[in-house]
Image (tube, rainbow, N blue to C red; front, side, top):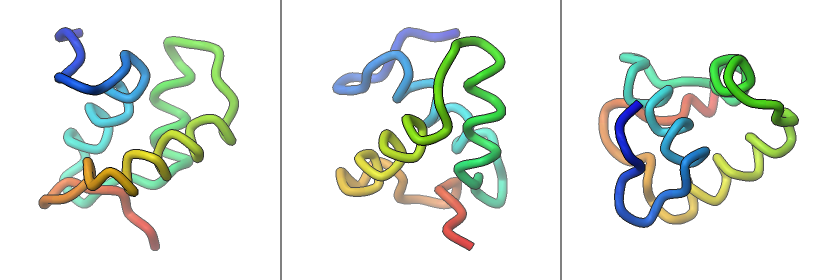
Length: 68
């Protein structure tokens, strides 16, 4: 894994990697499944982190959170 991007924690960077690697975007469930393989993390924690990233505008562009 590459070092976290400026301003992102390690887990936020992992979340963004999942989003960036999903051509059609990623759901919270898909992000949680990917991140929880490498660390013990609750789905609600991922939901909160994704919400914060969304508020910061980190998820803009073609590969983004799939809200549907």
